[in-house]
Length: 473
Ligand code: URP
Ligand code: ZN
Ligand code: ZN
Image (cartoon, rainbow, N blue to C red):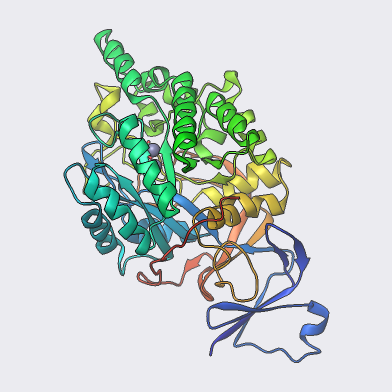
């Protein structure tokens, strides 16, 4: 039996903060001890980590990543190996990625393909949502089979016609099934049919630069789709989770639904909290920032509303939607963002961020005084664990929980840069941004995988998480 003792730290969960020593045995939290008594009781461990002056928090859970996703004529640049390792560097010890059912394919086949991609590759534990790209009788049956396999959430798209798009009728059928089998529908809520008209019209006018990506994908059309998704969930009884919410128009719909007592939840992402429409300008450099929904106009007040939503629990989760594509020829996949050099709609959609989320939200949330430490843990770890059936195995520091633990120096400042990050992508969306609050040490199931600026883990440390139903509180 291997044991570790983390001493002298401030242990923070979503519920409380306490000066306690954490005893870890065989990968799990064995005890939370009064520091004054640890020595007196004669508690010994194979390894002692001094967390004096530091915060000891649950490892982050990123509920929205896309490792090696085939998308936009190429494939997301991080593999499960490189992306999950980068997650670990940034203090994320669980990722929930999206397996894909392509049109004409069985959902179970898609799931098995994604299981094969991830198996033996990951640095941290991982689970899957399923993108149901072809709703038919067989898929509906397979949704039950997937729940048995630990996939208890299904992503659908009101955007991307011809790719992942589902009609309202297909969404209704999937929602009915989800209501029946206790799973949750995760929705990409943008009116893709309407957006595509604006895309065509912009291109006809010769508007080809990345900035037009932000201008045609209007906030009102995210608000409209969010409202429609909420109504479809209402008439089917489904639990709804809006992914990557970016616009105040969409947030208003979530607030309205939650005020009515509906089981509607939402996540936002660091890019919507820190970046804005201006980043899409500056000629083709803006391609770095092409994602959907797009970055919004700061002057319209989206960012501050999103931060407020996190304060008031109108937004429950911060995930990354990590989906990196290279600008140059750094990678075997070639010059990915360049696919859209003459046509913004051909730029692969997605941003890197899995490594940055925990420190960005610490900086913009805790350091900036917008949220306290407990709320920080809640939106980055506890709430996604509850939402996606992982709590209390993950998302907290309690006796019996997996010892997925991060140690943060709240005062240490560093600068985000592609020169020092570990994601396999040739730019950082947050290049040059200074953040205060540094993840120094990371334990995954009791094993120290990051410390002293070094990675000590190996691929395959991460295991598949067979998820149950969420709490949907
Ligand atoms: O731009 C994005 N969000 N890329 C990833 C695919 C998705 O819609 O989540
Ligand atoms: Zn999406
Ligand atoms: Zn996504």
